[in-house]
Amino acid sequence: MKTMRVVLFDDELFILKALHRTINRIYPAADVITVSEINEFWSVLKNNKSIDLIISDYLMPHVNGLDVLERCLIENSYPVRALLTGDPSLTEKMRQCNVVHMYLAKPFNKDDLILLFNNVAELKALPFSESMRRKLGAMSSFPVYPSLLQELNTLIDSGEFDLTEVAELVSKEPVIVAKLLQLANSAYLGFTRKTVSIEEAVSRLGTTILLSISTSLLMAENLPPSISAIDHEKQIHVATHYASCVKKFAQHIGMNLKEQALLFSVALLSFVGKLINVEEVTDQHKLTEPEQSINYLHVSAYIMKLWGQSTQLCALILNSNELKTPADNLSNTLYIVHQKLFQKQSNEALIVGCQQQGVCSSFCEAINTFEWEVF
Image (cartoon, rainbow, N blue to C red; front, side):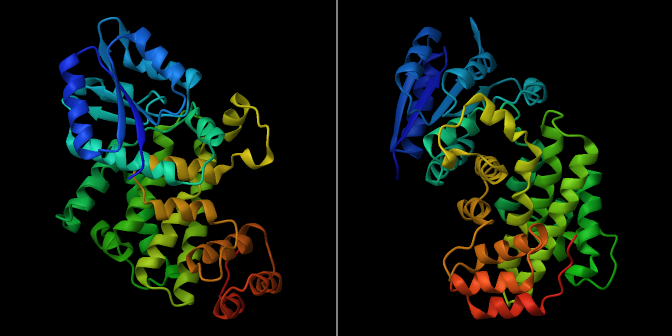
């Protein structure tokens, strides 16, 4: 378990002590600093540039937690920012603000803390340099984790659900229903019999694909209007086509259903970074080295990790535009389809590239025999 440096800021000392004790139990490797005064907080932030996580109370007598976290963007954008709030009526209003990575109920919930600490720890394991992490943390258009998506994840992770419950929850968002039915009726994905049932659509596609579709569509509702609704719809269309093609190619080369669903999700979620204005990040922190450049894949992986997606999925997002080791069939599948669809590479050029990297010969054969549907 890797060390994590955490700062807790709350004017109520008994809350600080209780939170500190809970963190010690769930994440013993955490180095926790407790602060109850605002001046002390800024001093700690200034003198500890390696802080990984800040947890601040929302309502305090002389300071607002949102204002504190907003200033953290300027003072030190590296840490993940979490806000404690005991007033549920303020939740939706606060969700309009894009300086918070995660909201925690007050009194705090142990499961929420475990999720937060796991996500922060796994974020540290992703191959982001310190300067890149600061740029990503400084995104002013960071999307807040959608409430509906949180409900879906909680329900599915519980393992105690049926399709009716999932369908009822998803039906709150007609745009998600429409996209799920479109995919569940896609002849390209091999579905020959039509359905208008959202329950059957979920059954056909599975919960992994359901969650990735919900995530990509809900992004627009939790972002400032950096792109138009039409542009967002175009991006979703392109991403969905890419993801469908990845899934079908994975099936073509003999991957199992679990691998197909994972690759569909990676391909689709790799595009969420395209909905963020990446230029604003690089403008705030001038680049000094070419390798520090941020692209949409970095943004996608960063957001998805903070939203609780697996480290495997986030690593695949980062690797989806390059050939990896010959045995890395998942990454190589993503690369081949991406090159074919977006770089317009010929079958011959793709095969030569794969052969030079020692990629399995079955991939080379599949490139020639697959029925490509390019844009």
